[in-house]
Amino acid sequence: MRAPKYLELVCPAGTPAALRAAVDAGADTVYCGFRDATNARNYPGLNFDREEMRAGIAYAHARGRRVLVAVNTFPRAGETGLWHQAVDTAADCGADAVILADLGVLDYAARRHPTLRRHLSVQAAAANPLAIDFYRERFGISRVVLPRVLAVGEVAALVAQLKVEAEVFAFGSLGTMVEGRCYLSSYMTGRSPSSDGVCAPAECVAYQEDGDGLRACLGTAMMNRFGPDEPRSYPTPCKGRFVTHGSPSYLFEEPIGLNASAILPDLKAAGVTALKIEGRQRGRAYVTEVVSAFRAILDALAEGRPPPRAAARLHALNEGGQETLSAYRSGWR
Amino acid sequence: MSAAQPSTPKLSLGPLLYHWPAERRRDFYYRIADEADLDVVTLGEVVCAKREPFFADCLPGVIDRLQAAGKQVVIATLALLTTPRELAAIGELAAAGMTVEANDVTAVRVLAGQPFVAGPLINLFNEGSLEFLLHEGATRVVLPVELSERSIAILAAHNRDGETEVQVFGRQPLAISMRCYHARAYGLHKDSCQFVCERDPDGLPADQMDGRGLLSINGTQTLSHGYLVLLRELAGLRDAGVSHFRLSPQAGTDMVGVAALVRAVADGARDPAEAEAALRAMVGPVPFINGYLHGREGMAWVPAA
Image (cartoon, each protein chain N blue to C red):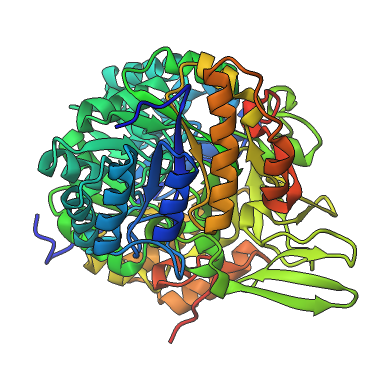
């Protein structure tokens, strides 16, 4: 395997084409999932079957890159077999690690595949050293993907106490609730982010003309109403506009994307091992753009050069064209 | 005990999720101790560590009074444990012989090897995670609100040697965050929140833009606007092996009355449809919901067939 430069760049692949695009654009590592409810981006037209996974891993390995397989949802009672099978298949296809969240699936993987690396998914939302150490002790995890709720200083204080690697989000869309423990979408649609791997699925979204504006609904619930000149955002529950004290506001979070490209030296100094780009639901062109922009920044930082001006390029790619450092800056809470 | 012959279900009062002034909270529990027909009462702050000190002085007296009234007392942990001090406190409670309800996996690490209750905010969705938690020492599991009747039945059947609890009344907890939306709704930050959540003892309504109710904000927690009401479902849950029915305290409702009503239905002494109508009169204009249990969106109300 090729040694990562500066920080390991972990990139999303919703399709085999996106996997190849990510590798070609300079990803150190690609993460993907199977075409079913076992992963948290279970959307139509996405993900991999067994043969695609095998071929994708071969493509990456031939170029010295790694592939992680996300089996990071929570099986419903009576359905754990599908999740066990996903872990077995990932191992059989030669995955470099599985990304897991459910206590039962972690237990299964640790017993059945002790030599297959286990990463703790952000869906497990382990954000303190004791929780992370618990997962290490019980299930032998090698890496934790940290929830998007910590300021940079908190990341540094946490990583200093860990006996496992830390991966943090650097770019993409983000929820504001503790991940893996948010039922807002299932409350409105009946389909669960936790167990079905879908948040605000497109088939539950409806837009309705409303005077000179537009209503965005999720299930029967109204998530937003856009005036004629307002930017329109996807009706994800935590990015909806709700009325408190008589006035509507983006109560949970503005519909904006995370972009931590300006603080990579801070994350490196905090002891982080890997940077994660969110977006397995995004297309190949997006993956190429974001991955190559981060590759250029990381290469420059590794060589002590000033990072290239990729900011504008990344900015245009983010959700709604607005971006934030989110929790990485203090005062977010 | 065999699951084929279910015993009489126990009634349990879940932790008060809201931030009430200490005196109101104390008086509420005194009345519960003296008047409510409940088997288990769970105390403890689940939502926000900053609220905990306010009730600390009242807690021992409330525990004594509840225990003297024959109620099992359980102390729930925070949904998000973040500091060693919070964990040490859990260890001390357990060492003092209190039963603790773990609402964060982090607490399991402290409680492992001794009996504890796995709370509804731990992701326990399947037999694998159930077995893991039983192995760690869970003697009762309070199932997450998202589960359908089918999932509950599978888990209860898998947990014949332990106890299985399901919420049957009150707002459903839907999400927790590090960020405080209550403070945000009042134009404040969490670090300087002035405890504005105390102004909304039954939650702050977060409505749809057309005015329909949808959510209820309680500090860092988001709840359903509607109250979960499972009455005609109680017999089926009992037959499936559910041993405890949980009521979640609401400010706008007489919880002693709710407990009496649920008990009567659970014991088969009162017709569920009639009890439902009586509950509507007690609760006022808040909608009833039961969607999750019926495999639907949580906010739905599935009427009797």
